Image (cartoon, rainbow over all chains, first blue to last red; front, side, top):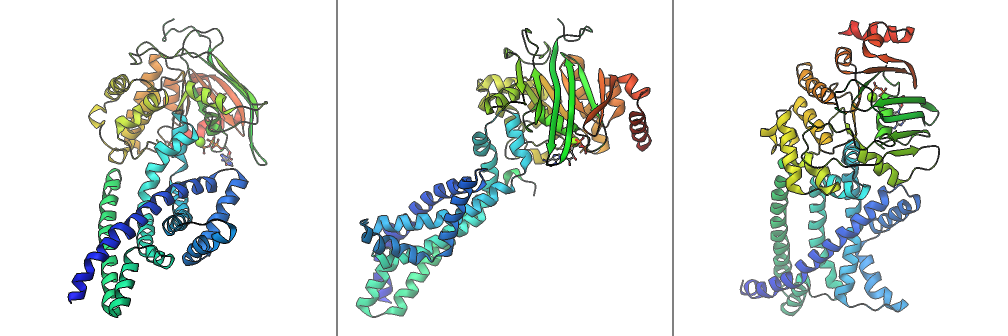
Length: 217
Length: 281
Ligand SMILES: Nc1ncnc2c1ncn2[C@@H]1O[C@H](COP(=O)(O)OP(=O)(O)OP(=O)(O)O)[C@@H](O)[C@H]1O
Ligand SMILES: [Mg+2]
């Protein structure tokens, strides 16, 4: 049990300096990317639509671990050498971008056409209508699926240990290798992931309540 | 010229030869329409005759294949907003606008058309994530870039007129259909358009809520707003409209003073339509 407590500090530090910032940064960048890809997907331009569809298809059709390895171990072969952190952030952002794009696209399409028309009626451009009228309504429906994406991402950051990013799971691996207490350390890591995800689920519920204030119950 | 002046002013709206097809379905086939300033035209006709398509074309929500739309008479000085219409601000002095759909119409021209006309939708289409007040000032503040305080003051005045001032902080889901539609009307008025378009403004309402909304529209008519109203409420059309236009199959079948078209229609198709509607009531 001593080992549990003595390893807890370094692991929490690994979460605070690795897992959480990695997840937050990748999610933020991924969401922006997702919004852009969703725009491509709903645009009337065929080429733009095809580009968006291709991107989503590639991201969703290949394993995240493979994407990570291509960027970190593969790109140097073509002269692009990236450090572990940037590699991880790029890979995770691209991944979130692919999944969240579909969520955002579906959410935008779920807003009734009449809302676009009302926006245009009061004189708004397509972009302005999207930002001020459509996205706020789309946000409401996309919070649950996007929360799932974020929670998956938090857990997926453990894969970054394989490209040498010192996040929480890598700390667990190092302590485990040194102490040979694999069961204890990996259960401890699992526990910390679980707690983080519980906190996130609670935050999701709160956010949903906030966004539901303008809907009949 | 006073808005209630009985003399016919210059046309605020002039539609010529409007054509629109959806695929092989020719929905509008050469529509002409003139609405003098301060006058009310009621558009009636069976389902699918193209009434909504006309209104949507007048607000740039539908792109006609051919024809022209002119809003604001050439040489006229101001918009149609009557003196009593509640705005303390200056009515935007927009020049006349002519769109020729035979040529390519630019997004800029569509935007200019929307500056001049405002629409009240059958299903209200209020913004559900905004309060009543926010719904009303969204256009004035975020599109027309008018000062917020001024927009709020005008919105308060308009909401008060339709008896909804105490609902200004409510969200649309908290309103009855009749209240929601009155907000829809106020939202359109707040844009200070030259032309108000109503697409069956009461057909989604429970019968007992219809009269309140019709009363508001009647008031606007008396005040001298220029309006095109699609409606199945013949009694209302007779009281409110200066001219009734009956269309069927994408063409205007008959037009004339409300009393004549609704009481003594000349055309067989109009007679049938009016008789059937009256029987339903
Ligand atoms: N976006 C569209 N795509 C294809 N067809 C359409 C579209 N909008 C309207 N139509 C067709 O155009 C015709 C006229 O429709 P419109 O809505 O203008 O009729 P309306 O006179 O308003 O009828 P109603 O009284 O039922 O509202 C109908 O046949 C309709 O099916
Ligand atoms: Mg219609």
